[in-house]
Image (cartoon, rainbow over all chains, first blue to last red):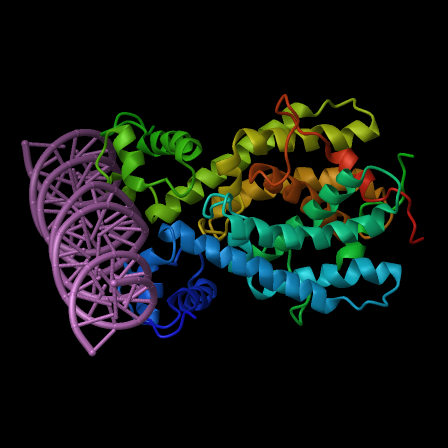
Length: 194
Length: 194
DNA sequence: ATGAAATATTTACAGTGGAAATAATTATCG
DNA sequence: CGATAATTATTTCCACTGTAAATATTTCAT
């Protein structure tokens, strides 16, 4: 249907090249001209497919959320016990964030991306729905669901960002030292204020 | 000692102007030329006081941590009960982050700032020491102190960032809906996995 | 006062994203 | 098939960015 125009499928090619360039140079080192040059087109060619540079960044973030959803679903086994139904997709979340740190940061930057973009909203919503499911396992029909969701989200996102920025170190083999369930337990060591 | 050079105290003036410009235009809209122009000097004048644009951003982040420490200390009353010794500086932390969202984001961006800078390290360390104190109140001589610190830090930082980026809404009057202690409690509604 | 050091300006350069006009290719339809 | 329209890509230009080098100015030390 959309084959063999001038380039073929320039939009997808630009996003692919952008993802590579993003992890190599970071968000700051990213530029429209570099991406276009990598694909082999002029620096204004992307204008026909994206709404400016911000539009391209938004498309990259959208792709990121799709990848993240796949990573979380892939890490979940359907027949897991309850603690694993929390821990395994959580670890899939971290695995994605640590493998694509620059992309992950971009996904949560409403300064760089267009938060009103339809495709971005859909992709990020799909990701958040999975996280809601995890929170539901924790909340277990009791307590404020919204509070549990936000608390879990904050914990997971903060941990990922602080590790990406190097504030929290990893273990020697590169893995995370504590996983999601460790963190949750670490916030209630004694339950002193009952 | 350092008075009445050409400008007087250009370094401080540039940082002050940078803070204003930062909250007005965001990190992306920030530029060395704008800041210099705002102070009334040429755009290369800052080179004598900072190591490039990154050096100026690093100085801004340093100032940010100093302001954050002041905000946390100011919110703490020496004679508070234990739950308040956790909640009050935590709320001071949020108050600062939400009042200076762009600065807060800059402070945690190792891509934009120079993490090896001596003054930045000292300032950020001072801020983290306070957070360690809060974690110590939680941990209460039991459990893994490092785990509790990281978990609390992740929770607080993630919550601040997600609110700044608009992912988590605020209440109608602009305040946070849940405070730190709410979030901690929200992660253990039933303690189902004993 | 005179030379040295610190500070600020001027000028130039290689980048950036974006707009407008032009060219090339493909699709549509008679 | 042939002609027109729509899509796509290039060229050219502009304002803006950070940085470097040479120059000018001011302050400090002796």
